[in-house]
Image (cartoon, rainbow over all chains, first blue to last red; front, side, top):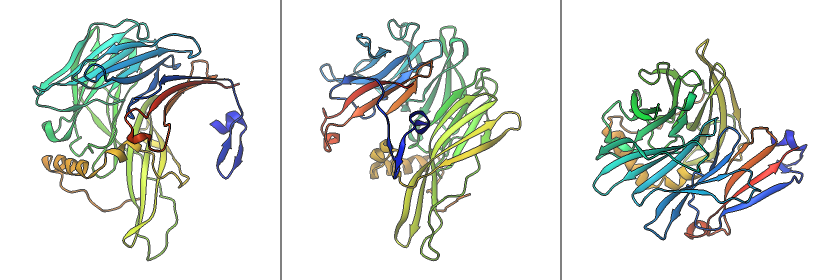
Length: 355
Length: 41
């Protein structure tokens, strides 16, 4: 895409981009969190969102919203989230509304998700509304937890951490409609969900919901609801493409392929999906090759099948999931094993699969 | 890094973390945050 826009020159995969007028501003000169969840919200990227950690008052988290264009001299709008807030996230819809949700984990053991809605790009907000409240549970709140629906509705995907939830109820879907949040459904078939990887929910204009996630075995899975979240059916996943790369007979073994980081969007007539595949080609006692590919596919509603799978591969990208690597220490491995044990899923297979 | 085009499709907006030095990941105050707009003809 960049190449098409800039008529770039190419020299051993280095791109020279001509200079265009640019405005650059500093949002935080220091103290930004590596997981700041900084994004633009709205269909035309009308509002910049990021989260800050205020260290002056017991590390309060703050949601920050700044209108574009960035060349205009305006101050961000801030929403203080309180000292017990563990995570916060925001999403924007096509009409300029913003929904802000935050997860409180109190010392008493109560977990609470609270949400507010702004109709004016973060200037004013509705009173906080409790979306979810439970004692003894540890849910997750991520950048993909909030999704705008049609006509001012909002959807929230609650995901439990580790093996705290009863079997078959790792995902809950809540909806805000006519000013009230309600639990509308539980996504089944997620007991082999990997606790490491991202989950993505999408909502179509006609109210269909879909959730993409990754299993322990590193396999992508997509489920869909056509009745607003009450019942769900599997859409399977795109067929795996052959894995590129050099093989040396006898020396190299079959590649280990893991899907990850799914990102699901509603498109005309179905769903669009982007994800990554981590490929590891073992040889003897070490790795002969190790790289990350980006893949795209779409699911067409009419035939009910996946098609147009595309693999973007240059075999130089070793690391794309920076955060996953940071988190994936021995402690996280043990926690994942505890989670698998609690759900009766056993150890992760070392088997391989390609196409 | 995250980015998007504006509604007209001629301005690219990006928001990204800045790393002042190779060891900044280990320094609590080391990371910054910037936003940029680039006009694309």
